Image (cartoon, rainbow, N blue to C red):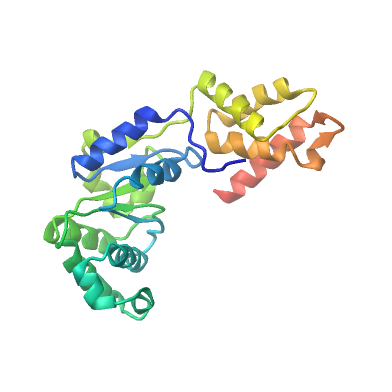
Length: 245
């Protein structure tokens, strides 16, 4: 199955594109498994000037990611400071911060921070410095509408017009998605309709949960002949998804 498959997200895609084109910082948020990063990366493929930091748990990771992207884009300051990618790993965090901040002033860049982990006050101060001194919009991705994982960055995104929600599917859309995913996975069973109805119910419309349960239905431990054992599959899914979170 194609794990990069995006289903029925045109409205959200257009919203993200509009926010990027406005060059204002924004917050993309939604529950785990809803497809935020997948959708975001598909949109960002059209915008080279948006520097995407996939892992943003520390400022050091962020500045290394930004340095690499600036070098790939042949930014003059980055080319002069690094030469090639191997040099980036030898630079201290302070040196990287200075070089990246200077490089950002040489173009109309934007920054997108994904997979944060409750950024500290110092992290937020660095972001404010990028936004102020470098005049670079810094956007972020949060895992819930409560935005706990944005930490000290949360005050930067208080304006509701600068937020974009990626929600679980409604029941009708979730059903269409589940059936299409099952078809793509070539899943068959005598109780397939019952299974997919339960998947929609159990998942609460979460795309990641739907994909995970459809994938699990192909495992021999959840099959008796051509019959899917729904209850054991769901119990194991709940245990594995709970541990992951």
